[in-house]
Length: 141
Image (cartoon, rainbow, N blue to C red; front, side, top):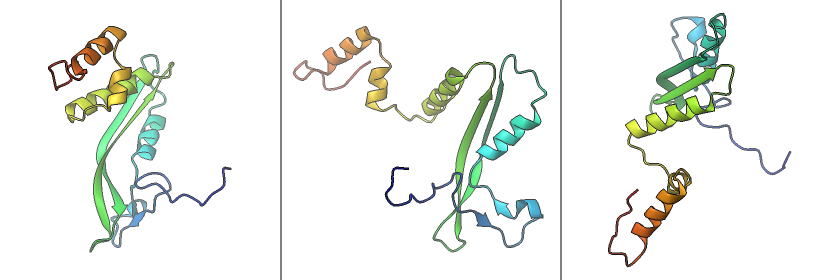
C-alpha cells in the first residue's frame, strides 16, 4: 500500500454511499442503484448458456441515484454501462462503442488523443496548417 490518507469512495460507483428509500415497493429495491455495472454482470451471468462464439454484448442506459445536499437528499444521474464477453478481449468492440457515443454526444477528443490517432502524414499536414504565420488560425485535420 502506498500510504497517505485514505481516499473517499468514488461518486456513483462501487463503494459509493447508497441512497435508501423510505417506502420501497419491496425489500429488493430498498436501496437504489449507484452504479449500473452489477446489473449488467447479472444479465451476462443469466445468459451464460448463450453461444459466446460471436461474443455477447450487454449495455444499459439508465439513471442511478446519488446522495446530494438537497431537500430530498439524492439526485438522479444518467449513466451508461457496456459489457462484452467473448473469446477475445473485445477491446476494439468497447473502444468503437465509446468512440461512437462520444461522436453522437458531440464530445471532441482531447488534443493528445486526437494527435495519437493520426497517421504520420495526417499529423504533418495538421502541423503544417497550424504553424504560426502560415496564414491559417484554425486547425484542420
